[in-house]
Image (cartoon, rainbow, N blue to C red; front, top):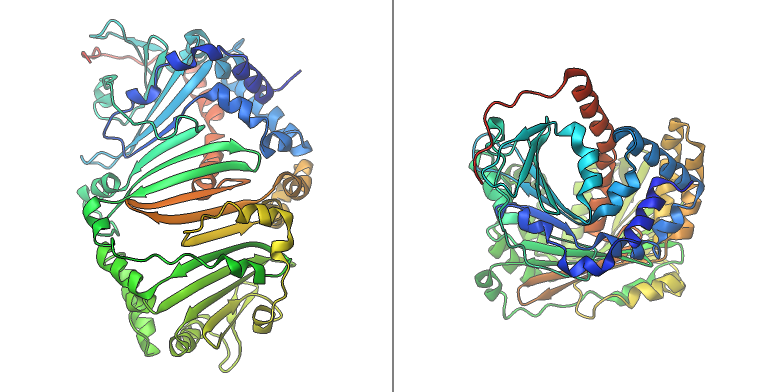
Length: 527
């Protein structure tokens, strides 16, 4: 019998696709003061696209099959008897999350989750044990239930969950289902979202916390889409027009992507960042120098002992390209960095690192970080740092071959001509190396299928890239790969805690079965 993930995909694909345009937008139920909103635009469409990704192939591996079986068991255990997880998942069409940071005391982030479904019955039956209390409502069109975790409100095909720590929930007053407007970022994307940096910092500071911040904070919008390489993402960082006007006359110099051709064939991933001393100085003026002042003070004190300028002044001395790359090696991958800097500054920086790592004087080895030796030297205009056991010469006299890989040529085609940050990788080999490093500690779990994970990942991955370019309103970032780019990696990282949800659901349902529904005294006031 097919497992729950396969059933989920099948049910989503066979859902009523013709109703997509008439499906309510769940983001309208997310309160407008949320600091972050994430929206899944079309779950059935995403399920179809998923079949063309490396993830679908990974789920057919021995470990993937084991994961599907475990997830199926967890979901069936969490849901009431007789409820089919595939029917519940397959009824969902769109989904939205909202994260709120109140400016009132105490600072208690609260969550909203809204979904639109084709048929409310499966989801209603699945959640019934968690929300046993029916509340009176001023709006007869809204059906409101209350549970230990929060409230669940239904309006036609729209379901809205609000966590118990939301304002008013302590008095059993669920917030109104309002009609907020969250602009569409990319309707063709599978996932899109907005993060309001200024609002987040304002909330933290309202509670008396010192938030390390700049004078100018951007709003970030992003979108992600399933792809044959895994996940593609696009993000825009938008600053206030007055702030960007101060940089109108700046000439942004692109990263020198020709440096990738100088790297050895064993390279897994590489990143080039273009630095411009004058631009850095003006950017510091725009953002402010007070970011995390205590830490900077300690860094400045260390730099001063070697006769070096303060940290922010030092950053303006970086003028040229910074190249960072990793290579396959045993037992650990090798990391190397080459940066253009004033030789007098670079030589002193080497001594700062040596002092911090307690390395021997007069030697290229600067010290140890755990079992890994760090080597550093100023060679002409370049400061070189590496963990390569062969030392500085292995970097300075490296052989070519990285761009001979077919996947790297594909990745380079994704880099925009005006990118000030450019990165490419052999995605399968890179993540396969990470999986290989994780294999030993993971073996303690006793799951034999984990032993094939490095090979499975190497086979599934294609290439990865990141490209960041300036524009009139700020910066745009395009990235992709087996785990997407920076945003994709964060979302995949959040999936770990999310896997605990079935167990939490089961625990809550067990409490209801043993203790019975909790009494609710105040009726729900009008919306």
